[in-house]
Length: 189
Image (tube, rainbow, N blue to C red; front, side, top):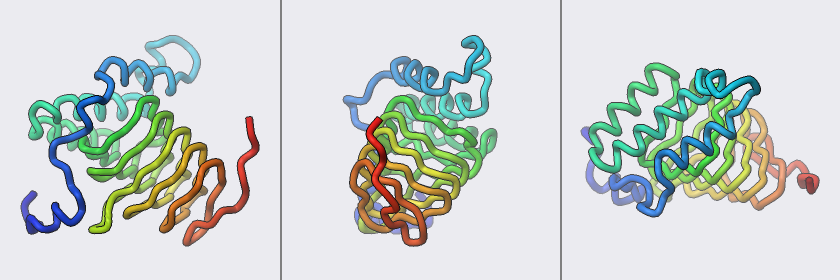
């Protein structure tokens, strides 16, 4: 990337090779994403939603980026222009991703999102020289929430609107505030 010294890439752990090779294939991911984004009605109605379209183009960028990084970056930019979400194809994003309102969502390279993550509008997941954000399974990130740096969020967590997560969060809790703190434990369902 122009403008950044090579040491920045080493310090942040920026991996230009893309997602892990053992990641599920494109159609497996798309099937899980479509199922997660089901809103009622037929399949065509679900495919035509903005929230699924943004995830669809993210998956295409991931797949192309593994083979030809430049193509992955071009499709990522087209997704950014069309839907307003800036999600790096190098991020490790599990199946079943839901972007209710994709505008303003930013996920940087090196970040990890577990299966069945829900991101509302304006969510930021990013990296610092210390590391990248890592989010577990079944996590809901509320509108405007921010997780930047070497922060790990456990499974089954709800992050409230506009929360700024600066410390690791254990599993099964609800967090909110600036900086985010545990508000309560989630009820077992």
